[in-house]
Image 1 (cartoon, helix red, strand yellow):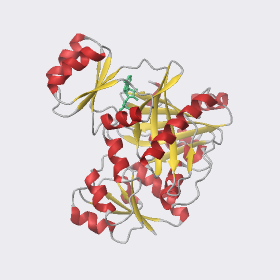
Image 2 (image 1 turned 60 degrees about the vertical axis):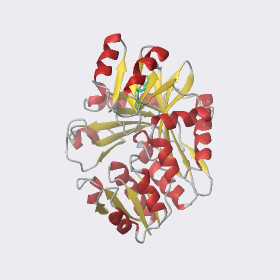
Image 3 (image 1 turned 90 degrees about the horizontal axis):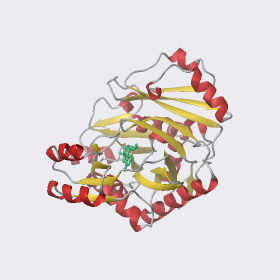
Image 4 (image 1 turned 30 degrees about the horizontal axis):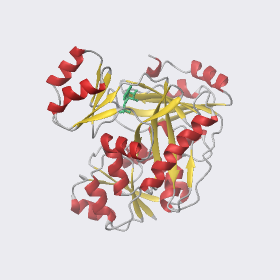
Length: 364
Ligand code: AMP
């Protein structure tokens, strides 16, 4: 049985690694000849808009899923006429646009950051006036890892942003002085079964995830239940199939939904060693309609992203219960090249193990 995956980055790579023990084969479509899955699976190198390539890609596949959310919806729809596509193209569309995403949250009575659409540059000043400062201006589409974002604190920041506004749809959000950032990974199978991983605490720098702590330190049941309720509403409203990630700000003891990703997520990498069933395996189980695996955590984990350069493996692996993942990508500044997961029986042991590791960039 061969599954098709749109996108050929590290998320696809780890999906394939989780699928081989289940007897699955994979075929990837990615426009870049550099896509890391080329090392381990069949790859079609073509643009997502190339219908002939999509046709060839779909031939003989059991189903198609994604590891990248900025696949054109039109490509997902084209494929959906030939082979089942999970999550549905409609779910993909809802998660591609920050305005659509936040509107969905609002319609489902999910608390989200206050926001205003800035459809054209001439709407910008009025939006700033209405929302006030500080605020965050973001491109509504195609943003990731902090790209396409401007933090506005002063009138000078507003004037500068105004002079360089890109001619694309933008969203202005109120700046949230959050206590911390959390994310939940939720999964819903073709049969409607759902499962939720424990909330994870995430630390970003320059918009890029550096460190995740799982389960989130001092995690209390009411906040976990609140995150699950939010995720359940989104899963059910979209009849979602697969893993869905929702990112939150914790502010004044409550959750504010910031964004969602219709795929396995960087803040779920810890589940490979740290949960009974990894997010990758559960995504595959969900799209195949197999029973979901337990999402319980096996101890306490830290996941550190390796960004821009790679450490000496022996320096990392000398710390006990530490696991190294290299994605086989060419090093470039700011590029996610791998990750390290550290596991321990208690938060205190985890802190001790982290202190034994070499100084990664997340500490800076
Ligand atoms: P995003 O692409 O929306 O996940 O934003 C990337 C990062 O920027 C987030 O993880 C936050 O650290 C920060 N950020 C985004 N939006 C806001 C906001 N409205 N208030 C405060 N910080 C934000």
